[in-house]
Image: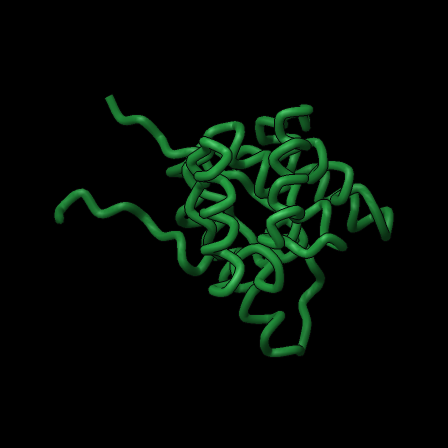
Length: 163
């Protein structure tokens, strides 16, 4: 029996998936990578998001928010628990995530506490960052959790069973 891996989808992925096309090359590359991942790779995973993702996705332009929320309605939504909030506070206290980025810490904690295999994000400032990731992993291990692999859509491909 194939056990599908679980992916926590952070808000930036949904935003890039549904965003209007742009001429900014970096943003365009993220949109294309996200759309490609969504159509080709996503079906091989079970997708999850937290209620925080839903709250963030519902903000802003009403038409754009409806598109984001529509995508999220097809996923399993997990509530943010006190246990997740405690881990988020630990991530902030250990400076794994800046104190001003509470929501980012909650995303990491939600993915970690709920046992996700991957945390998919385009937040390369506070989450998918080579400097912060070791601190995030360390803080999670010290709190007796296994942090999911943090990655961007262009980094999460199909698993190769031939190796």
